[in-house]
Image (cartoon, rainbow, N blue to C red; front, side):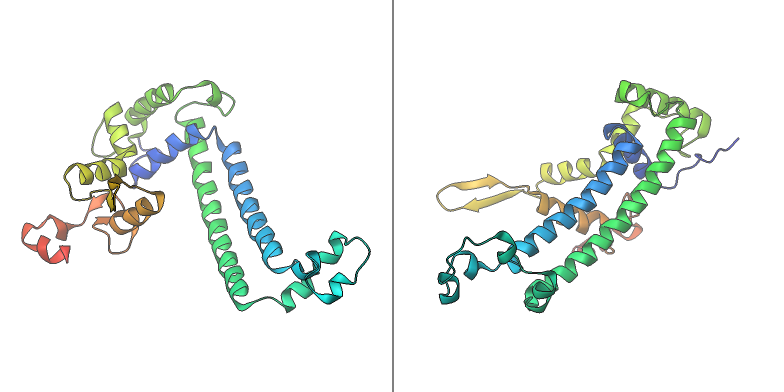
Length: 246
């Protein structure tokens, strides 16, 4: 009999979320993490705008004749401008940065809501399919969760290609992107090196570089992989490889 967990369309993403749900200590911690992440971004943008745009630095450092004539101690409320004054004197670049920040925050909000809905589904899977209650999760290792996941495969048929799964099957799906990256480096297709004068070659595999690499290879609309894990058919044809490489 099929259950609502049977035949997962994107088993890679499903297993990754199961792993992250355990590593992030459950649904409540994930909710707090998403909320604090959104609040943190608002604080950083607001504080940066305040420092850059809303502080009267000539008055603070007494660099104008008017400020030098002030004999009393300058209070902080005199230095910080009101929101109306900040908006009135705001530079064009600052306004553009704020607009981009708002757009990015809305994107993060939508992504957070999507993640929470996905993890709520994972929470139900833990409770119903794996028989792991939220209070029991902190006391369980990933190995124990994985053993129950292997048992759940026999009951719920998460993967349609195999009747049973092994630990290696799960690890290969969890580390699929990393395995591709390691293979690219080992084959010399992607040498993560920079040549610096005097110093010579150094290994450079920054977070920004990895993000752009994954965007090109896995996430982008023109990436070789369909649905992030399945190689497109045209890339399997040997005669088209040279044309596709261009």
